[in-house]
Image (cartoon, rainbow over the protein chains, first blue to last red):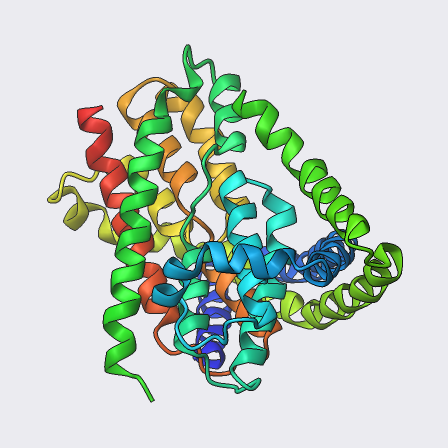
Length: 193
Length: 172
């Protein structure tokens, strides 16, 4: 699937660029993107070390288990098939909390680490488990309580009440999340292994 | 209050975990370093994935494909009450975070932040994610080749949320 999407994006991008005579733009863009990705990863690396280290402390202190026990009911439904005391439980819980709090760049490394833990629970198989798909979907929908960047831009654009959109944002987010959970649950039956 | 919570959450969580760990006689620093090593390795693993994803996304964005697509589907979408002005944001949002944010910053000044259109694009930006960046990076980092229904379900969720944004701003 990833292979197809990736090839498709490159194909469409290059062919459209050629046809529209934007060869210089696409060539600049693709080279600039390499610099961007290095920058992004270097920036993330520090945060990943920090969180990964802190999470290890939490695990050793027994905090991960307590958190996982607290969220057991929700987790049984959303992420079935993960053993009770597997570190994936804690990693997922912490990553989702970080998303909710709007930690932004700090949330991505946590999410990546949680996905790796889920993959370990799935025997590092190249085929995603139901739990991994559900976690991917939850991360691909926005579950942030306060979209601070959007609020700042609204303020700069001269809004009299930048946060007036918050109820709308919450309703849309919840609707989107519900649609994602339902869609994932329905489709997992169709192509379950 | 909410401001304080979101600003204090990171140091607060770190303090809480390290304090509890210390009180429970965990050799906190040794354990931290051991975990941090794994984080560094994980970041290294993500690097090639990131280069691949960003390269493809940047090609697509710079090619002008999004504009063509927007022109094509403007008319049919207006039948569902979706204003043509917001179509470019609708299309680009799942593909590129920086491109959609740029478009948003520029459009909100044109529409006016408190107008209907301004509210719609704010709601869309606040309630959706960059699906085609998040999924490949997460699954790529975990070395997953077959993501099954993850993309389909994510896009359904994303566009359903955007549709709700368009309608909810008419009411609220």
